[in-house]
Length: 121
Image 1 (cartoon, rainbow, N blue to C red):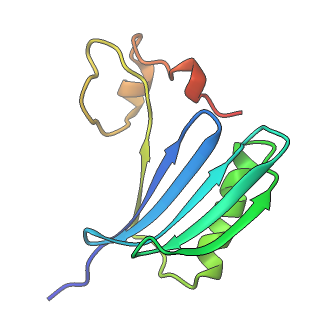
Image 2: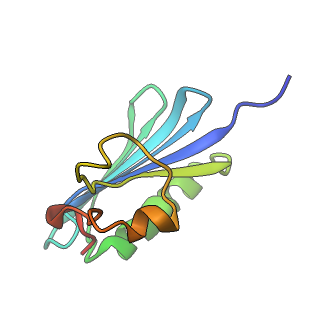
């Protein structure tokens, strides 16, 4: 019997970042960072049962700062490292309406551009 793959899912919104670590189909923990690029923000860490473990104000001037804070929060929770990472990207277009693997061909497609409100700050 093999161990369940651990997947880190990333969802970047216009001013928020959500990270969730799954083992098989079970959520192990999640981190939400709100207020990216704003004067004040909030970091929330939840356990697998969605119980709040940490909720604290924070300052995340850009996506890089939010990612660092989110990864640090996951590290502090002493969770196992992910085997793979998935990222939700909004790009739209008539030829790309379903989930796809991001490849160089997909990125080069003329109809693929990130939605303006979801571009990293």
